[in-house]
Image (cartoon, rainbow, N blue to C red):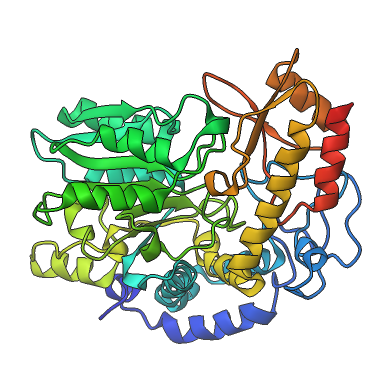
Length: 452
């Protein structure tokens, strides 16, 4: 089957492009970061860690941290907003960018199909799924918009989401409701996030599921409170509700996983959901402007794509006047031209986490988050919003400080050398997130700063 570029151009550029790709692996750009800085240096103020840019020792957390060009004048507890690129990702971006800049046509023709396949294969290996089930997008919001805009919701059926989801889920369904008249309801899963339990969350959600429910759209880790939903238990509850329903009639469980991907150690088939959407430029520390949509093989048939895919069978259908084939991850991936140097470097982000160990990353984040919550709970005047139980929380930790609004607290933290963020919801909290670029010592330092 012809690649998109081969079909469109039928040029002989591939041979020259392969030579260029090989040269790009060891030539210009291989030692630069994504912004064009030499690897091992930062563009901001402050100093960098000793050993920055050295080869990765995945068993040594200092070596992991040294893969990032981040300066050391600030402790990075807000990397979950938009992350820096570790060295392997930055080098891959620079390599692809150099190839596209030096001979765009040849490099694109020679590289695109192989590189996109490599990204899907790397994602599938990390997620424990089949590569054909993985679609590529530019962000969580794009993935949710495309998925929720394309899911088949027959007349008389409805969508159930929650009060705790982010703008992207709520607005995607609001747009769908305005366009198609789809009924959308929201469930409240807990009143006090700090004391939320799995039984409470599942019980409240399942109480809202009716025979009319076609889609249950939830967020794995709530960015406004840090609560982590028991997705497997929700899936088991829905399985009971779906008993006796025809395959095309069952309620589909869709998950926004942007604050779980790169934190949780789980294969997606074990999670039990039908679809999962996540940006990969947060906890996974992937290239900025990248994301994935995963769907079970037997669930993709319930989705209609909104953007034609630039993949061989789609072009074959167009050329031969054939109807679109059943959906899968590749066919769901929006076609067109993208920031290819970033998209193709996503394979290195998944490989980076696999080399460290998905289980070790999860344990590292949990260790710091647990210590941070315990320490915050001991400080007079601080109220921890996020559950202490690791089963009900992930990396995000939200808290309030008596007598100071969140922006003021954030400013004082910044003055002391600690980054964080404010939850972008009607009820605002201070929000921090320990990760693989922070350390237990920095957690202790943040706690000491907050005591002051």
